[in-house]
Each structure stands twice: as structure tokens, then as C-alpha cells.
Length: 450
Ligand SMILES: *[C@@H]1O[C@H](CO)[C@@H](O)[C@H](O)[C@H]1NC(C)=O
Ligand SMILES: *[C@@H]1O[C@H](CO)[C@@H](O)[C@H](O)[C@H]1NC(C)=O
Ligand SMILES: *[C@@H]1O[C@H](CO)[C@@H](O)[C@H](O)[C@H]1NC(C)=O
Image 1 (tube, helix red, strand yellow):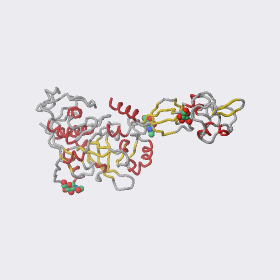
Image 2: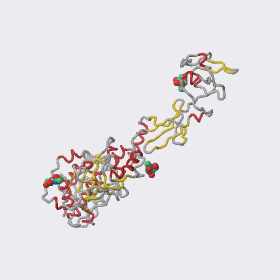
Image 3: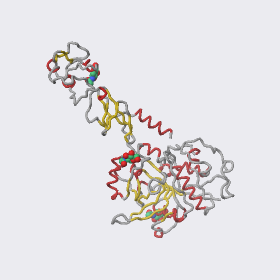
Image 4: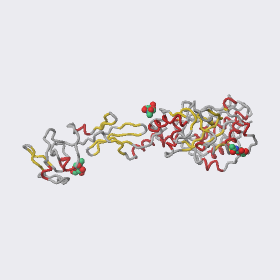
């Protein structure tokens, strides 16, 4: 959590404030002869834009019974001794309804609200500040792209029917930048490199015999892990790994080892070449589970931080300080065999049908964060903004009629953004077309049960 605040502070201080909005009328802090007749005073003595630099007492013009000035010094004093046409004639600045109250000049109006000089406020994910620079007051805002972008959301609402899914505004995502979302809500590094050296499996099956719908939660009601919440920690690599492994332990042991393995164990202890809450590689995660094994959630509870590993070189559950497992035969940590790749749509289905949920990595575009329900398909509106990789758990598949078209095939997938996101923490995504590359990086695993 700490790092997020540092990060946004840094953005706040370092980012070049740029002007996004001028006050409806630019206000200049200019003393003036309020109520004096307008007229060509400086204009009668000096050429356009060529009044006097610095202080020149003789750089003046008569006005009523006295003198007004056309030198630059008159702009520094708060005495009202500049000629009424000093600004327009000498500087080409047109005054609009100047106010006699000096503080007024140092105030900004923004969307119907007043802000004083130096005052800051937040506009979605950006910090804005009212600054009077020189002699005008403007609202200056950071220019980050926000995770929930108002314009994008409006377009998604309008396009919802065509897209086949509905978007919503999540209040815990509102006020964050897209960069923060990509860094801290996802967290899977370079899947192409990671999956490259994993072996594909060959399965003999009849693709025609695969059911049109399947949900591993209905098939194995007591064995499938629930939905986790990674919070603001880029840990999808660790959560999807621990959850797929947990599911496989429960299924392959026929319930005698229905364990909830600890993703925090990976975050804190699988640190070699990994970045904890800033992301991790799946091949390194699986290698760690294969070589050292994991403990359960109760033994190494979730903190969502890059804590120091408290289980170094512990090989059995007892010396790791864990509670005795349900199965008395289990003494060592939970280990798995080598992860394997699933090459195409039907291979993935066959794997889920016979062995349970699989791990998949998808490319996440900005619109995905706003998904609420329906069958997700990424909108071209977000194609030009940053995206990132995210690992999830495919639980099954199905088909749904949308309008009068052919039924749309989808994958049923568990995300790790809590149960309030999407459809109780799950989402559906178009199946069979490698939507968001979700069919490219799919992995299965064998659990080493007792
Ligand atoms: C006011 O005068 C200073 C020099 O005395 C000059 O640098 C500055 O630009 C002037 N301000 C305006 C708004 O002309
Ligand atoms: C989204 O929700 C936040 C907080 O709940 C709210 O302040 C904001 O105005 C909402 N934005 C939109 C576009 O609805
Ligand atoms: C998927 O790959 C398997 C071989 O692993 C092959 O038998 C099957 O026809 C392929 N399915 C599709 C839809 O390409």
C-alpha cells in the first residue's frame, strides 16, 4: 500500500502540470483606474507594444488632473497608477471585467466551483491545482489516463448491445491511474517467454463428444477454489498458480487433500527473478512449486505485500510450523509435477473436463476493468492505450444466445478481483477465437497427492 502512495506523490511532484482548462475568463491581477474614462493615454505617446521597460518616471500620460504610467514598473505595484490602456496598448492584453479585489485575481473557477491560489483537488485520478502564475489564475491538472475513464465508460454504455457485455463504474477502481491498474491489478510477466519451454501434451479424445456447456463448480462442488482478491498487488501470477494447484490437489486426491494453497508463500519466497506484487513469471512460479512445494493459506496467510520469506528451507509442514493436515500421510509441502501446455480450444476443454480448471494468461485492455456482465470481447476503443498480461483460472465454458445471432461460445473464468467485480468475481469471454490471447498460454498441472 505504501508504495502506491509514494508513487502517486512522485507523480504529483514530478509530473509536469499542464493546463487543461483555462478559467472561463482568464483573470489578470492588474490594478486599474476603476471608473476612469477609457481613452488613448499610453497610445497617445508610445507606439503599439513599445512602452517603456523598467521604471521611467517620465513614461507617463496626463489623465484628469494627474498622471498615469506606461512603464513596466506600474505592473509591479499594487497602486493603481497604470494608465487604463496600459495593458491593451503596451502588452496587447485585453482585460475582461477586472475585479477591484486583488484576491479575486488569484482565484480559479472550475466546473462551477471556486478554488483559491495553491488549493488542490482531485479530478478522478489526477491532482489539480489552482495556481496564479504571474498574473493569471489557472487550474492545472496532472494528465494521467485514469483507470476508469469517463468518456470510455460512456462509449461502452452506448455500445453494450453490440459488444455483448455491460460495463460499470467500480468505485474502488475510480480515482486510480491506468498505469496503477496495469501494474497492481494484473501481474503476469512476459507469458510468451515463460510458456515457451513448456511441453505440450497429446490427448486422445473425440472433439465431437465434448459437451456444449461445462462448469467445474457444478461437476465438483466441494473441490474448486473460490474467488480471491489480489487488492492492489500485481499477484495474478501467484494467485492463479496457487488456485489451480489447490483445485488439482482436491480433484486428484478425491477430496482427501482439498487444500487451499498459499499465494503469499509464492509472493514472499519465490523471489528469484520474480517481482512479488509487481508481477511474476509463470514458469518460475511452477518451478518453485515443483521443487519446494507450497504450504496452505492458513499457514502462510495473505498480506498482499512483498514480505520477507518466513519459510526458507522448510521442507515439511511440521517444521514450517503449519497445522497438521487432514490427510495424516502428508508430511512434506504440496508439490506438483511439471506444468504442461494446452494447444487449442478443444484440448483446453478436454483438460478441464477430465482434470479440472486450468491456468490461462490473457492480455488485459482498459475496458476489461469495467466489465460487469455478459460475454467479454475487447472493444477497439482501447486498442491504443497501454495493456498488460493477467493470469486467471478457466473453470468451464458454455453458449449463450445474443439477439438473433448464432449462439456465442464463451469460457467461464475466475478472476482475482474479489466477488464484487464482474459476475460474482467471474467473467465470460468469447471462446474459440483466441480473444485477448486467452487460448495461447494455457497450462495444466499434476498434483503430487499422497
Ligand atoms: C511585469 O513586469 C515585468 C518586468 O518588470 C515583466 O517581466 C513581466 O512580464 C510583466 N508582466 C506582464 C504580465 O506583462
Ligand atoms: C464513479 O464512482 C465514483 C465513486 O463512487 C464517483 O465519484 C464517480 O463520479 C463515478 N463516475 C462515473 C463516470 O459515474
Ligand atoms: C487441437 O489439437 C488436437 C491435437 O492435440 C487435434 O486433434 C484437434 O483437431 C485440434 N483441434 C482444433 C479445433 O484445431
